[in-house]
Length: 390
Image (cartoon, rainbow, N blue to C red; front, side, top):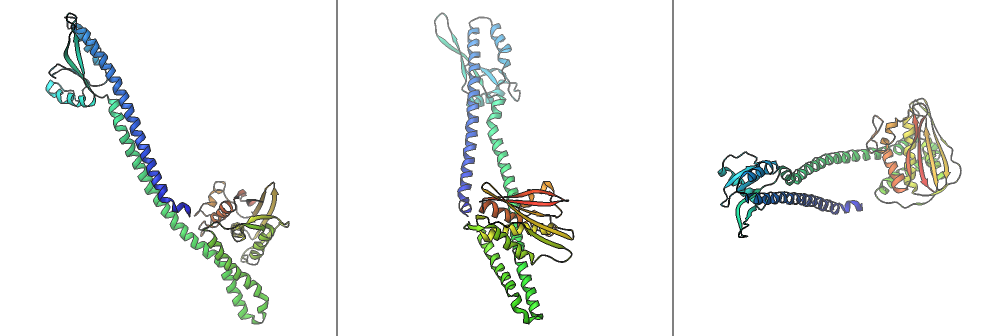
């Protein structure tokens, strides 16, 4: 129950974690963009120095050679202008502008991305510096993709989360509805045995009123059973108290109750209890007896032939008690050995898949034990094993 009380904190924590991840992604991408821009700037700075040295020569051949064979090899947009800002030459412009007037707006955009680098001529005679042009450069395609990458990733992640949220909400609502219906059916199933037995006893009393004392104990057992069913469901929502319990007596009581209420139409069933020695464990009698009863009933339902048998064994290994409940029923397919404990999964036509799911919760969550199918086949039947700490 505490988990549900902290649901708001969990959601807030996940939201903050999402913001941290998005912020980290944005900062990392911006860092990459900054480093790439600095690398491009170093390259343009080198070109500016080469061009400045080439200007010393009166011939324009060196300058043309640098622009044609060096600058045109770069992968990012670059524009050379004169001192007044008139574009003289350009390279790698996306829309292939032809005139200097068409290039001017692009130059203004590039200057917002990167500071232009002046082409400075050093007069060897006077030592003065003269600016004879400017190199403007923009972001490469790689940088542009990196700038937009976080937004695409955030959009894709948001879409994935949205679809996942919608999908999981649908699944959760379906599971809730199924569990509610399953719990109602399980409640009716639990009440069905004692109620139908009491109805049978009442009908028998009408026909044999003189034999009332003969069945009082049985009726009392069914009434206690109804009270036990109420206790079972009331204790499932909390952490029940565990007391020292004689496991052999607990199983004996479960077997004795079920033996007198086994289905008799079309089947010859018997429950063989091989547990005789006293074995003490810490357990909740009400819930553990429910779990063992569910496994036995599951075995009874699995028996389709006329002659059926449920056999219960017990062995102690170190600090563990192992209870084996074997039936000679139709068996469980290997792929469903774990599925049988999932809420809603059932191999029965009219089953709701709650009995073994509740059993697993009782064994694992409350008694810190384990329950699993040890073996199963259509020929030899199925063996469930329950492991409990001594």
